[in-house]
Length: 314
Image (cartoon, rainbow, N blue to C red; front, side):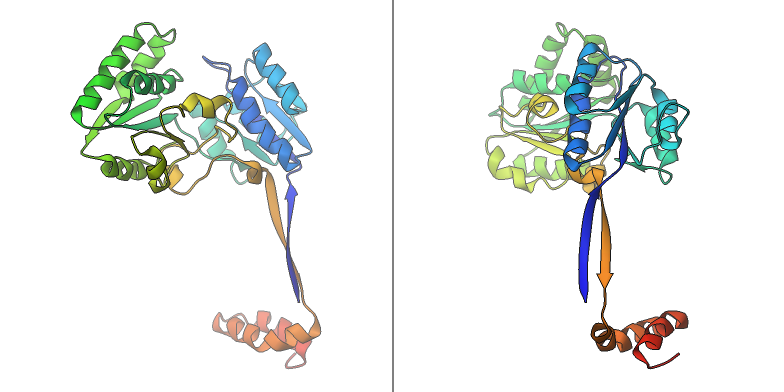
């Protein structure tokens, strides 16, 4: 008897790169590089309006073809193919509500990376944190989109008030303040807890996309975070380092799905195949047990396919 598992790259994948209020060249890198490392033969990218930097990132990351199409129609083209857009095996990359709905609809006919909602960050901060730094991190997330979710978990009311004042001050000079202010006003919230342990417990209940630990003992507490897409540990680990340079993909589970989902990675662009080899001796040793399990399920034909080989039935 011999059992083995073969891991192979997907043949062709499609990347969706948003092109709305921000041209996300970084998302090209965060989706294409894992696919390239996995060994995907053909990488197809769709985007509604690429910047020169986005196209340069696609070239550097090894994207094979780029199509200037966005929205739900881009997802449909990748899932089913058109005269010009080839059908892919899997679609990866974030998008707006229409893109996300389209990915949900085509799943099953094509693989998808995840169902992603609006981007979110939860920052736990105590008295050791610099309010201006924490506020800057919250606004960095808020400026993505009017639906962004910036959440502060403050250890003590004084921390919450200091960070809130900094948010107001920094918003005044933020170029994307119209977007960020809507996110802060509509989805932003400051939650006050008694201690760091309560902050960690709340984070695990929320299971957010990004977690920032602006806590005195951040390194010691980090492993207690069990439900998050990415955890930024300590005052110098701002989310921007993860978005652009640290290494792991910034395509992360959102909306509480970090309870069971993982960041996009090389394994998302591979598939596993099991190989099972049996010889006569192995089948003879295990045959009676296999037949017994088949009889429990009432599937006589299953058992017969074994017993006819072992000479114990036919």
